[in-house]
Image (cartoon, rainbow, N blue to C red; front, side, top):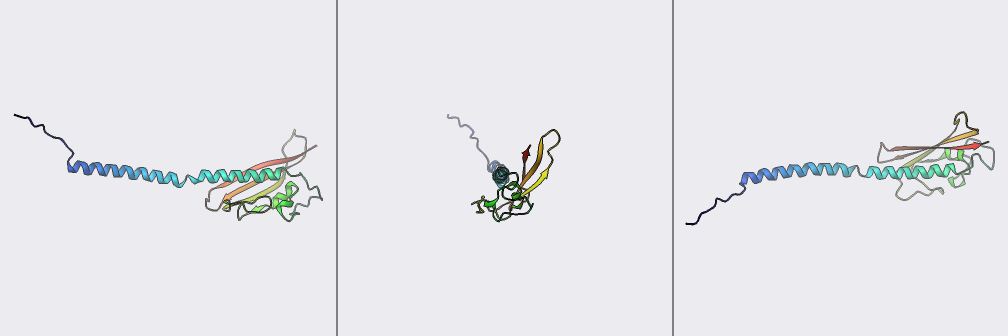
Length: 160
């Protein structure tokens, strides 16, 4: 006489419980994924802000310490940025409608960045044989990310 084995399987209730557990797990993982993907652009925006600030700072620090054409007035002597020929001229940079190249053209894809440059005379401390020094601070912000404010500072010195 053949022996029948008792077959085992999932019951309907066990299947429903399993589906509910899987659904809750997937929902939780999807929430974490959405949170991380929503803020994944922040590092890119910060890297772009750093590159913009470095470009402006390098451009300013490569110029002459004082105006080679005339006595420094401390005002915006040059009409356009392409005419800037000394560090204090960069105190006039206030690009609030997008990062720009040295000729004033907006850089494609960087229209949401705002750049300001502040130039001030500073004392770098005793023990340094300096007649004068200038501090250049570049501040970059982004229209869409309110807490993105990046500041880079560099110094240009006139050595005796």
